[in-house]
Amino acid sequence: MPGPNLYRAPFVVPVAGPIINDGAVLTLDGRVAAVGRYADLKDSTSRQTDYEGHVITPALVNCHAHLELSHLAILGESPPGPGDMAGWIRGLLAARGAANEPEIVADAARFALARLYAGGCLAVADIGNSLENKSFSSIFKAEVFFFLELLGLSAAAEKMALARLAGLDPETLCSPHAPYSAGPGLLVACKARARRQGMLMPVHVAESAQEVEFLRSGSGDFADFLGERGLDLASFTPPGTSPLAYLASLGLLDAKTLCVHAVQADEADLALLAASGAAVCLCPGSNRFMGVGKAPAERMASLAIPMVLGSDSLASNPCLNLWEEMRFLREDSPGLSPATVFAMATGNGARLLGIADRLGVIAPGVSSSLLAVRCQAADEEEALDYLTSAGRDIRLEWME
Image (cartoon, rainbow, N blue to C red; front, side, top):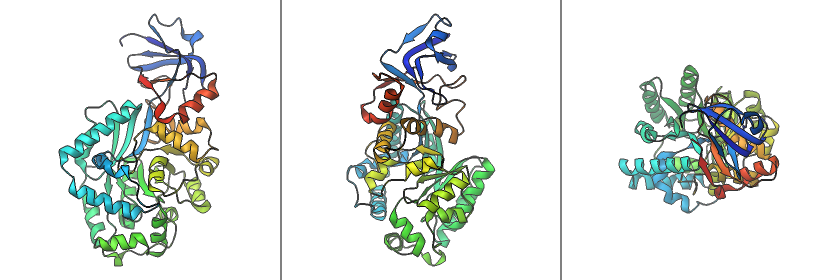
């Protein structure tokens, strides 16, 4: 809307500061001009909108998704055996080979992104194997940070992946898949590239017990699966450590590393994360579906490890909805405060992606694309409790 606009609600959740009772947000030219108590801002404009029975919040930030897997949503309808990542990957590869028409992939990805936007998400960190998938977001308001995913564990596969990496446009963001699917040279090269760019490097790590077993001993279900795929593992020496300790030994953990999942993290692993400043992206919905366990989120919070939320893909999560992820996380980790959980879905992710100056919080200068969430709360505590526990029952509208 042209001109200044004032939006009032019983509660405004800035995230960057305390909840404001009987709050208001003043916007001008697509940006927040001021946020505070309604009594202090009510005379600043003639155009006012009253969101009685609502809470005004920032838009959500999804720090881990695989939009290009959205056409494989049928896999998200039936969970694999508990913790059987290797079995799930077998099914994924088979389904992907049978249904990989570019138009189908693109249409499903756009629909998934539209669903995320309808659920209040305005920024997504998307992981994909094809550069063509960077265009998924071209017609949407949601901002997509695309990371090209690279795999290559055997000597031959790693050499090919490194050659591909070297030939990419310097601005292309990259993500090595995981320590069980990317060799040490590829892991180090991806991190070196991210450091040159001054950008984030996501990596799946410590997601399943099968991964831990493979990196510690070189045996187990992952070794069998990789053998089935015809990979020559003679060139790969298992580090004999936990997945997170392996990344640390390669010098990969720092404040610009995003460790996705980190379910299988013991106290020594958490100490490494805390000392390095590396962040963790929790995907509780996907972890539930896969049966891999629960990340030690409460302990992470006590160690001040930066945490954000992600939805993962429709192939491993029946519902792409960050409100549902917040609900799952609170059920799995009841010791986490609602304020901590809500920050994980908003301001924390925005800071990690370098967009906190325009998204994730309500403060002067950020985008005026904010959310009015229907909520009948008696006080600030009840409002935050509802926002982080209602899940798919949340009803919202975009304010601008």
